Amino acid sequence: MLSDVKLVRLAKQGDVEAFETLCRRYERSVVAAALACIRDLQLAEDIAQESLMIAFRRIKTLKSDEKFASWLITITRRQAIRAARSRKLAVKVSLDSTETESTTDEVDAWIENEHLLELVARLPEQERVLIGLRFFDEHSFQEIARITDRPLGTVTKQTSRAIARLRSWSSGGD
Image (cartoon, rainbow, N blue to C red; front, side, top):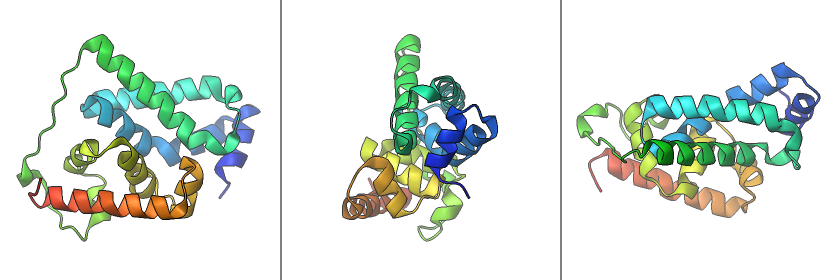
């Protein structure tokens, strides 16, 4: 498996397949970042697609190839904010606890669950990014530390706090 840096370099040279690989790696985090801003899954998916297209067109402007993930998330957040402003979207999150069918030990099973995305959207922005990178895009803690430019200890501690919050919320706590 090629590293992000290698894929970015290939994409900058016009390799569409390399960029598609990057898109597959980060598509869930991009949707989660958009969803956190606008709280509408279908619109978040549209924003994610738009953000990936913008990233494709602007890939040559990325100065630090190793910061692709944070650059892409930044593009997504900006697009989501623009969409929210232009549509004057109201923030609404349904938290019907009956939607949750999994236990707190089944984090992997949660990923496809819309209820989880709604819970993740409630997290502070830093924690949303970490959860997205760890569970949606399956990056290691070391990779996340590199992507976010944070110390490894900070990444693991903040991720643990976010998981504890999600577990609490999914079991009916607030």
